[in-house]
Length: 433
Ligand code: 5AD
Ligand code: SF4
Image (cartoon, rainbow, N blue to C red):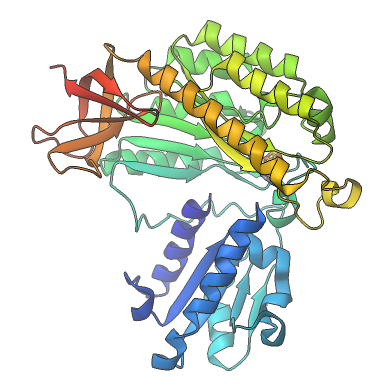
């Protein structure tokens, strides 16, 4: 989401004739687009801000701006040099990027500038993102902003504000333009894409997420469509049918479970039970055989017992996730969990549980990849493999990374690849045609 937002910022700046540079040391303005989801994400940014101060020596007019969720969460605190130990000139929340040029003028006139007003409408629908760090093959399209699910651990509803869906016509236009420019893969982005909902002014048509996905898929059969992230409570059969009947809608579903214990899920305000989740998994397996299912897991949420933790391990095993993002619970100030519950799982226990979760997932990923050996997949080439320039890498529909010998392929080529070997992270193969 931040990657996508930075492309919107780049567009707003480019409109005003600012030019991107490759290195921070060459810049007159540095924006850091920040994340508040866990404390370690924030610590990284604070360290970076400290380090960047040294650039002020060679460029006394350097403007340093903090953008995104940390700007929204910490507001004027970031401007208080005495407290932070570093100087920041601008603080701009995720809904205020159109104001950047004006805020820069304020900074030039010697003031510090801040805009952290959240909006109920802003979707940046009319702004064409500048794909400045793109591989020319895959692109993100933001289809909605904000979240109102209020999972008790999560800071997003406070930093990104109310949920709002972007006009589908502007989404389709952006997707069409990307396809015409040669992009082959689009990821529709939102905090909770399944609750996408837009009623056209004429009120004749209401767009939900499955309708939108199918319309994007219809643009070009060679354009792959992905999406993230889905909330299990709104994962409809209608969407599963759309995935099943459109070859170019990828067979990969990211469905964050967070915990396998009903009491923890309830305390997290996730609005589904373990049984509900497993029922959705069964529906996916039934309707989209061969789909990859990935997830997010939090270890050591408030009050989590050893028994709760075992239930998470057990659910992971039962589903057999292909991949997972795994985190230790990190208390976020101002969230319902921080206000109501004790962060009472001791740090060493959290670490131990996370370690067990990671070890299990590594085994599950390896098992899932081993089952792919001998199979043939259509792979979209992204570029040279990181380890060898005699090989290229790309992804299959399941979003697994596949590495295979280069026979002069270009980024954006589709190649049928037979899988010969694997690790827990990568499939290794050879072109099958
Ligand atoms: N602590 C740890 N992980 C968190 N996530 C969200 N908030 C927290 C938190 N306070 C994780 C969830 C979510 C992913 C994006 O980040 O697993 O799905
Ligand atoms: Fe956070 Fe829950 Fe919204 Fe995801 S659905 S962004 S975890 S509040």
